[in-house]
Length: 118
Image (tube, rainbow, N blue to C red):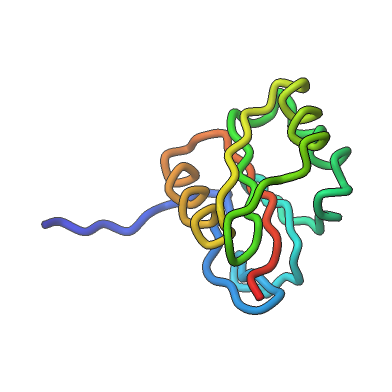
C-alpha cells in the first residue's frame, strides 16, 4: 500500500473538532461555521439561509453537519436551498467534515455548513 500526502492547495480542510469548535487551517473556530474552499466564516445556523444561498452557482454540493447526531433540517430551509439549485447532503457533523475533506482533496466544488458537536 502506497501512502501519499494530500495537497489541498489553497483550500482549507477540517483538521479536527471538539465541543463547540472546529479546527481549520491550524486555528480553532467557534461553531457553527461555513467553510468554502479557502474561506472560513461564522454561520448563523438554520435561521441563516441567506448566507447559504450565496453559494448557489459556486458549489455543486453543500454538506450540512447537524451536530453530534444526524437530524432533519427545517423544511423551509431545505426548500429554499433546493430552489436555488444547491445540492444538499445532510449528515452528522463528524461525517460531514470527513466527506467534505475527501471531496475537497479531489478538487470538487463543495461547501460545509456545520453545527457544533457537543
